[in-house]
Image 1: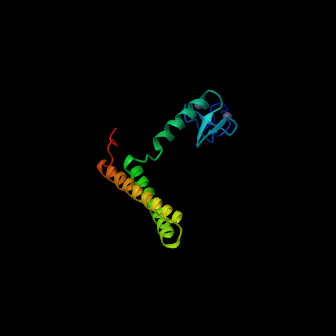
Image 2: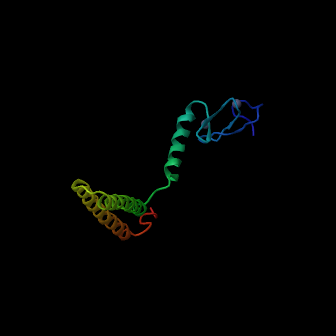
Image 3: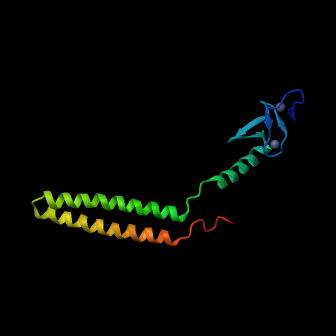
Length: 131
Ligand SMILES: [Zn+2]
Ligand SMILES: [Zn+2]
């Protein structure tokens, strides 16, 4: 295939928008696509964006919720460790109070994790993939 603008020169590819052959001099690289210089550049950029939008791996609500639930669990575990440490190691009143506060936080986080997980379970998988 020859360059549309330079018939004597071999093209290196075609414009993604108008499909004309382009040589090295005429071609513009927009993302991973080629475009004529000038008018097509913007259009190819828009085309690329549209494709990128479609290919974006979409995290469904279920996965997102489960991820949150796991995060809550991790934090709850950390608070439990803190609580255990404070309650067993510290002799002071303040240390014990801190331990109970940690214990309370851990309990709250566990509830949050359970609630988030159960919410995730209620969402049917792949709801609106058809559209
Ligand atoms: Zn073009
Ligand atoms: Zn050319």
